[in-house]
Image (cartoon, rainbow, N blue to C red):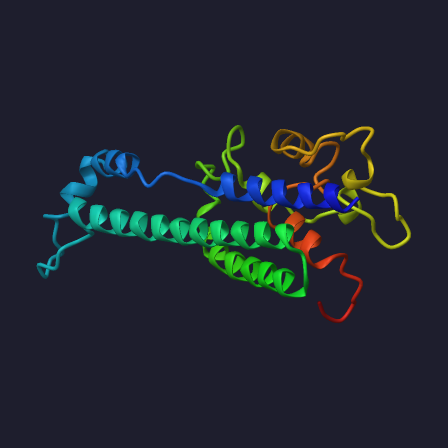
Length: 209
């Protein structure tokens, strides 16, 4: 049972980290900037009756777009770095499980989650992170989670993937990825919340963590 749990935790961490990776290629931004319509460019020379310029120029739009792209890239880079640190802490816990290594893994999760939080502002565009066909956001941050889908919970000691070796004889990246949200949106098997549950256990408190 412990070995099955350890494999699931390790692979859940791997899926979360791997899916978080993104490109810092700015070609898309440059193309978008260069496609700004002529009427915007004309605003650079348009003035009011008092001679005050009207509207930003293409160059100003470009500065804003590229500054924004730099901020997005920096946010994802920070998230990837701390997610990798979390994975190392979880690996250390799995190699030598005790209170100290568990505490370090939990602390690493909290740090990594804080770094991931700002990136959620960039996931509402139908872009690379949350594209309906190929975006990995659902593998990283799907919520809410039915904890019983992964492991035992109060009143159901045999629940979850961990306790079903007949259907899940091997727990791999492909298995967990395929199982994520299979049969229902609360059937979460990868990402932040699956890892959180495996590190802390079921939340039975109505007033706090």
